[in-house]
Image 1 (cartoon, one colour):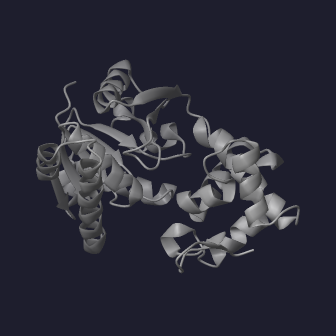
Image 2 (tube, helix red, strand yellow; image 1 turned 180 degrees about the horizontal axis):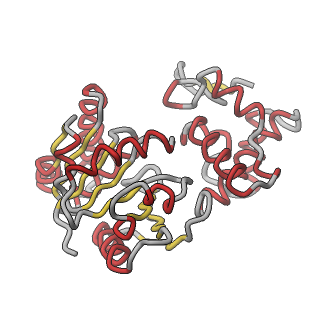
Length: 291
């Protein structure tokens, strides 16, 4: 199937990043969110990020202007349904995702492919609630989308070959690399990454080290570009907790039990960079550890 237009649902950090790279690759993009302010902020972020790419000579000013002209921001969900490929990039909550797909179904064209940017939730289960499980799959971008090269492609049990090949072609047109993952909880990247982050939180919880010593140890001792607690703040502690819960529930193994301290931070609303407090406090000129 030829894909010319992309619908992106959710204008948060993942959604605006996906819209950004799709528009630069030449796709017409419809970016949707229920919140008008979120859409306005997303368009400003995309413009700012493309301006930065121009200043670094990654793209030309003409590329930026043409890409920005390809993006339409709307609160109208049926408008998204008219595109060739829809990527749902809402918060990592299965009930919210299902509600979005329920709202799309009456307006979809017969050939429209549905995908989810979920980082952990069953693709087969999401697809089963739609009228096109064979045209449904996982399309998991890494954050920040314009920078990270990997995209996980996850087939549900009913996903057909044409749908997979179409999505693979989109990834290739973006100049990114696809990794094919089976539909098991958290797929590949987060199946490995999130337990490491959770273990770092346990290390903090048990007093083995403080925030600084844990992050410095992994940066200098394992050559990680970011410490695990710094990375958790960047991802969002609510997202980390949601993925750990999916792993714990889906695999029924106690090694995936979320650390109580991670739960406590989320209960406090300390979700990381997006709320200005997490394992670090970002309200000053430089981040300060909160423990």
